[in-house]
Amino acid sequence: MSSMTLREVDVTRIPEPLPKSVHDRLHNILRLDERAVRSGRAETPLTLFERPVDQQLDEWLQRQLTADADGRRRMPGVLLLGESGNGRTFTLLQAVERARSRGWLALYLPKASEWNDGHGRFAGVYDRGSEGVLALEIPRYYDRPTQVLELVRCFRTAHADTLRELRCAPPDELRAHTCIDVPDEADTERECQTHGCETLLQLADTLLSYEPVLPTDEYQQAMLTIGTLFRSLLRQLQRVQQVPVLVAVDEWNYLNSVTGFGHPTRMGHWVHAAALRSARPLNAWNAYARLGAHMARGLVLCAETAANIRGQVRRKRVFGSLAHPTTDEMRGDSAGRQAAARILHTADEETAAARPLALTIPRFTREECFTLLSDMERNQVFRHTDDAMLWRLHTLGGGNAARLVRLCRAV
Image (cartoon, rainbow, N blue to C red):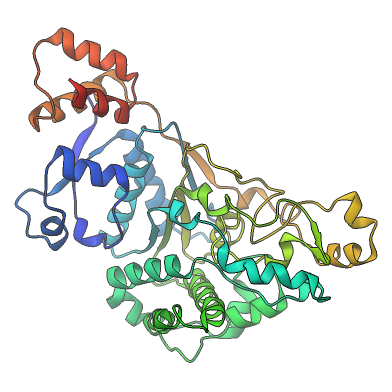
């Protein structure tokens, strides 16, 4: 018998857009009305398969986030690995739903690939390098403001009551105990302010109030403000101790896959990726090395996509937080040396405590595949003719759930 079981998932706790694989199961296998399920009016709930690896992860999260009496340092988080179709997205979503059912805070980004669409807003910033202004003195900008607004809006919807009770930590405490990115005095000072807010709910509402400004001519200032307020919220979450905090990101490695600068470049003056080191308000590598490592009572849980994307995350190449190593050409130029002096690297700061636990989601076993086939037959995805047909489907699927679903639809 398979140890994999169906588990009801309370989608009313997930205001975020459902990932594609979960959406596919909801609509094409279970044939449910998403609006009815989200409102809690559906007669049949959304069910996802719970595997032993899901139970293992849940037990580990509970130990890390609830038992801290001995004062030991927690791991900064978990990185879910594995082949495409093995169920990392299902594992991550169930972890978020469980966390919220226990009263934990869960900041959930289900589609990091949506943070991957170009950098047109920065065209004017790039051009300024030819105006005789040192690139590193260009004002900081933050991209992806609409994605940040959607992320915070859903977070507020899921946790409004809890956020209303959590008071903002004072600036001195944030300066001393929080870190989001490569330390920079100007960025840190802005991010460590409470912005006139007394609670985390007020901080979230202040951020959301800037949405109407984006379509106007003041969009650059709005982008900066939204990014600053979002990073202030992340710093506040680092100091929350009343309840556990989980930051969950699906398609984690998409966060850093596009950069306007491949290497240090000269455009009038040296324009280095460090000039825009705060462009991404949330950076993939620093999700563990800083965000997770400095949490008082929280951790980061990410799932890596197996998609073939440009710009995989590397220690020496992280857009928005640290830059590529300097080049010989850059070091041979006086302006280049001046720019290089401002570049900071996180690799030297990294310790064993700042590395996540890697958990590989395995392929489905033979018993798990037969459980999947039974579920799809019960939901009339295909018609079972004989046992030989089940064996053929299992063999062709090769332990990959997504491939098995496609095969069943084709039968």
